[in-house]
Length: 490
Image (tube, rainbow, N blue to C red; front, side, top):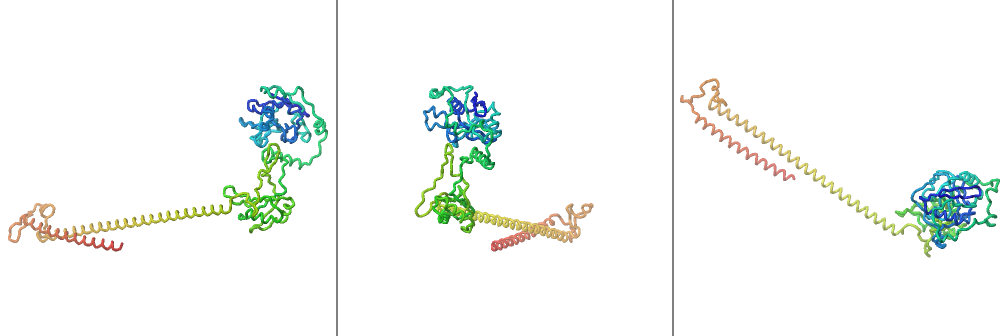
């Protein structure tokens, strides 16, 4: 599915992407069949960039889609939405793409790329074909970018779409002839032998503006910043619109004063724009107010270079989309940001929230400290209790050792008194191991029997028991006295 385009500098054959861009190809084929593009000039021709055409008026502001004729010239059908899927990039020389009018809509205008790798146009304009024959014509157009190049004729080599009934009657039988007005105002490229002298800086600036327009940074290449708007920077954050309007109003009536603020917090970003009603008043304020001190800050004043308040309306129709609000009789209105009382109320609310958070944090800190002190007291109490327990255990062991020592001494003394030097051992009498007679004689000459020895031993045992009971009572009284002393200290 191809279309042959005859221009004043040569022929171009375009192969259309019917599967990827059916709507764009349908629009282009039917307009070519209606001879809509005949004698349309390339109104935008930038060297090593693009060649744009498709506007019968030659201004870049006209043209409409084929659906305008199908829907009985309905104004809502002048443009159609661009096709996004699948994605096709501007990577080849001779890429043919529909022009985005600024609202992601297409009409009749299209352009052809004059070099490769124009990827910054992707996602803005819709590619619907490639030049397969006539690349030398594109090179010639790139060299004759200063001349008027027009489309003389279009020939459809193959059309896969059916013709709608409403368009059949609008197809001309023969190609139309150029009007005398067109011939008088057009300077055909192949009739020019010499290139006109152009200012290189002006040409470079125009090319840069065109690129910014194509990528969407500028609404139009011919747009200029307003002459009656001043840019004021290095402001004090406390300076507001009323202060600036009161200071600058002495030079003349002001239409709008706007301090740029953060969209989340509403705080000043320390620069502003002031729009005067007269250009002369704006120039006078520029010469008088530069480097003036306002609110302890030395400000800088310059003419505004911003075109952010202009929006592209269809075809180069620039409109100011930020209209100033009406003035009140007593003061200049705020244009952006919240009211001062509301900001103060929010600030107080934030301060109360911060104080509550700090108070809660202090309570938590005190609670943690008290818990640590309680744990330390418990550790000290356990440590003292363990120390007392160890001391009592050591004392008890010492008493047991003392009692055992005393008991041994008493046993030795009793044995010595009763048996003399030959006290019995665990084997019996001392001489029993050696076969001696272990029975001793008493004073009467009779042998002492076991019964008398047992009686003496029982008597000693009762005495030791009484001594142990007395020691135990003494220890209990000492422990009770120590516990009373400790409780009194606490």
